[in-house]
Length: 102
Image 1 (cartoon, rainbow, N blue to C red):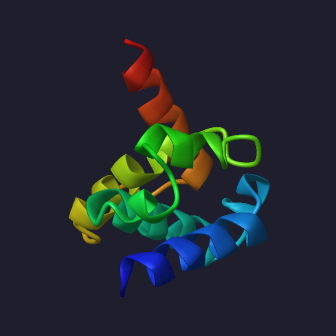
Image 2: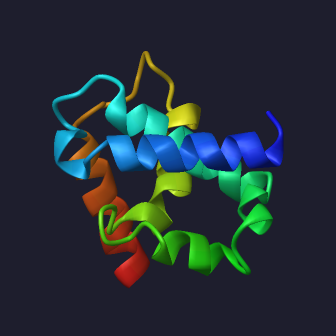
């Protein structure tokens, strides 16, 4: 996906999904974390924002944990579905938030 289209899709999804629905919706959390990870890794934020932090700041009112989304996506991706404990999206974000604060 081209950078501009990726950024537009990420922003559309972030606007559509509320983090309060992450634990109850089957698609909200996966969509948000995957698109934020892609925006970070492909540096798609550069199309509009002067820094990755500016991209985050543009969305952190609605998504206060947005800075953790890419790491959450990486954690979810590497979990072995046969051995992963699973859990709620909010619990994963809380663990990442706690680890960041240490």
